[in-house]
Image 1 (cartoon, one colour):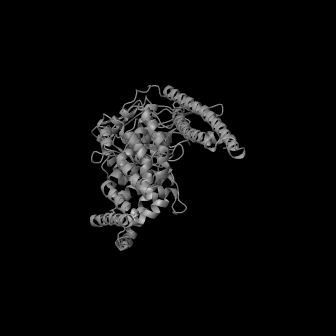
Image 2 (tube, helix red, strand yellow):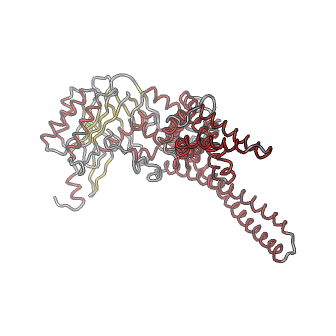
Image 3 (tube, helix red, strand yellow):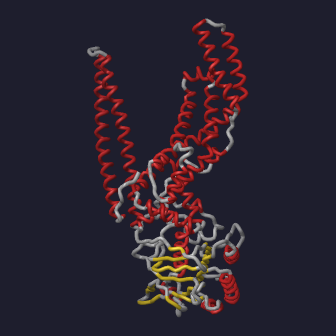
Length: 604
């Protein structure tokens, strides 16, 4: 199913849709009030008629059926109105969050993905990928855990260029499908809260607890025999011993199978609930048609033997409903002779045997659509952000007008940057100097986050970006550990060791080192920093290092023309420091530390 092309002005489109959803909420609010009043009037009328029928005995009591039927019908309609209003309210919140993202008011309103943080990861903590106000919170509109986990996995590990290009095509196709994203967001509210994406496929992949064709046939035969013996005794006066004999055999078989039946019933309770929630999302995806190869492949993964998963899950739901009917009084009476629970346990385990292995594929497909929709939403809301261009050859990165995606557009300062490549004079290492708060650390994060976006298949916050496939390693937010008994300097050199190890991987390393080795004395820092940078460069890595120590600005001289210095400047006027955050070639010629101390009242 294709939807109408959305406006290319995301703010206007979101505002229009938000107002439309709010009008629906207001309409259903009015209906809610009217129906509430009408139900009250019918209830009062019914009470008056009951008084006339039973106290005054002037009306026949059967007339009470009228208000009862009307009240029940109104209750059913009222419930539908309330559900429609709740859906419209969720849709309004969906578009309001979109407007908040565009207006840079999104921090703290979405899923921050803090559960994906890993202190040992080479860049997740340094680049603010997860947590309050993080890149993940900005990107993720996925409303299923599977979608969030897929997106997090893409941000934590670089993809191959062929995979990235497929994601580009999928994101481009999904970019303007607002109706699909809205539906998935609304359907996913309960799914996200209800489904833990790992136990469900694990249940599906476990071997069935009841997998004997002979025992299943025996249970069915005994149930039929018990039914036939009962009819023969009740209708034709046959000897009851036949019925008692069949029941005795059933009891023996039931006792033999009881542990496995109970285990099968207990095992399916939570997965069945989760699958029922997931089915709502699957039904919506089954209605959608796609054209790009990646989305067609994902859509095809939903089918198992040509039968859509929603139908297969529907059959399991019917089995679970029959199983739950054990609490019905009638089923309690006829259930044991018919071996009700045993028959259903066999049917459920048969479902798991034939469909269980596909559950992981279904969840994976839902997760991939959720992650791609998140990237598509970001692309739609930032129409000027391009997809990066991937090139072959020596490790290289070239960016024009690059800035940090978490900065508001009206505050962001764009810079041009070039690293590596085939040209003999292209620097592979840039040493960034500058005063405090001038933008050095932000530059590292800007380059790192945009490279992560590029390698995940997302648009980048730049006017243009060309790069070879890279993996990122950073040492920006390294701290000491009281529990681990390690100093900041020791934690930093362990991180540097891991970055050196990353150079042995399949992709060249982009290293980002903030205030390299500033936890030791100037002499050791200079020797150690030069050795680390030379080793990284010799292994084909590209990168930036920032420093306040001007002695480290001599490192490019040791790199055979493959290093360069850049710096940021500040201006101190009328007791205030201002920054323009523009990259300039060469080494900074000033420091603002003393001016900053004086500006806060410290005499130096």
